[in-house]
Structures are given as C-alpha cells and as structure tokens.
Length: 216
Figure (cartoon, rainbow, N blue to C red):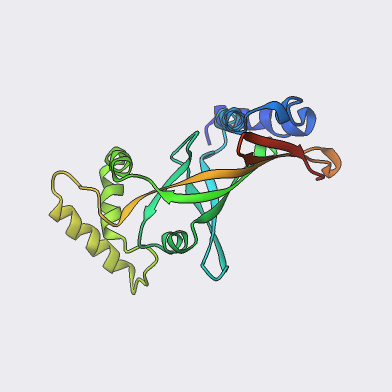
C-alpha cells in the first residue's frame, strides 16, 4: 500500500464517530448527500470505494448477494454491468427489484439503497464496453458466467479462441450489458460512539422525498 494512501486512511479512520451525521442531512437531496459521501470515500484512500453489495431474489423470494462495481450514478439511478446469462441477471429479469449496500469502513459509513431495476440501453452498454481494456472485453465473450466450469483450462482455451477471432475490434456481446437501479429508498448510516449510530432514511414520494431518522 502506498504511504500516502495509508496516511489518508489513518486520518479518516473514525471521523464519523466524532463528527456524526451532517445536521442538515434530512433537508438534503439523498443523491446529493450520496455524492458528498462517495467523494469522501474516494478521498479517504479506501480501495475501490465504488464496490457495492448487490442483493437480488428469485421470483420465489430466495435471496442472493454479491459484490459488483458501480459504474455510474445520476438522477436516473445506479448502474452496473454483467453477463445477461448470469444468476443475478436471471433473478433481476424475473424479480426486477434489488438492494445495494456501500460500506466504507474507514469512515464508519454505510449507504443502503433499494429500488426497481431495468436494463440500460444497448447504446449505454456499448459505450461502457468499448471503454474497457481489451482483456476484459475478451473475457466477457469467453465467460459463460454462472454456468458450471469443468476445469480452468476450458476457460483459458475460450479466451485464446476469442483473442484469435477478434484480432482487431472486440464487439459488444448480445448477452452482456448494464442494469440501472432506480432508488425508492435510501438509508445513510453513520457510526457513533457506544453504538448510538446516526441513521437517516429517505423514501421516494410523488412530490419528492420524505426524510426521517430511525433508532440505531
């Protein structure tokens, strides 16, 4: 770990315990508050602050969770990308609701987000796909994500096959793309001493957001 990153982590460790939730948190727009917290996480030296837990469920309600990377966020929602043949994609297609969790330990902060999920446009998927380095684009073609893999050698052979097939440009696979979660609720969690944490929630309403605090 770089010395500068270590120093940033030490300086930010426990900051929330002392400062707590911003006094005006309940008057803020939740997306703007998220933006401020995400910027703090980026500046803290944390590794991959864009990493988030994505929780999905089958149509029968059986849950599953995994870590994914947030690639974009705006007023329309939070975007991540995957293979449309994966387990998460199958669950989202049958039950288009999900939950996200960001955990930034050095700042003692969490953000929980729940909402409906839909696929992004093919143009959005292509734009992001083309921004990835070549190895990741080849990997998207080679991986039959979530299918059983008899042995690693088979995956490596598929990589070689697609490297040969796409010697120049690597096109967007029809089975790969993005999803966007449109938030219906936010919860901002700030660690405090004696486990008397601050928790501020936002619920989407027809005319904006309803904000309120809950017990820790």
